[in-house]
Image (cartoon, rainbow, N blue to C red; front, top):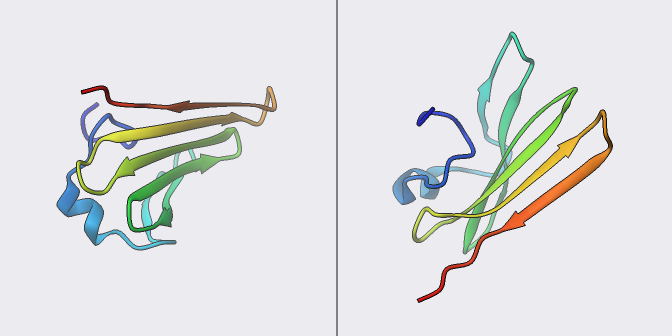
Amino acid sequence: GRSEFGGLWAGPAALAQLRQRQIVDEDPVTKMRTVVSKVDEASVVIASANQAGEVDSQYDKRTGMLIASSFYSVLSKQQRTYRLQSHQ
C-alpha cells in the first residue's frame, strides 16, 4: 500500500529529518524491523529486515525518488539489486 516502505517516492521533507540508525518501524507479527541504515549528502537508505531477509530502499534526498532497491533472501542466499536512472 501507499503507506508501506519501499515505495517509488518519499517526501523530501520527511527524508531530510531521518537520522542514521533511527528505528522507523517494528512489526511484532513478522518481526520486520525498519531502520535508516545510511544517510549522506545525496541519499537516504531505509532497510527492512527479519529472519527471512532484507529489503533496502535508497532515496534521492532532493527529489524523493527511489534510486536503488536491493533484496536479500536468507532461504535462497541470493541478492538482487536494482538501480534506477532518469533520462531527460
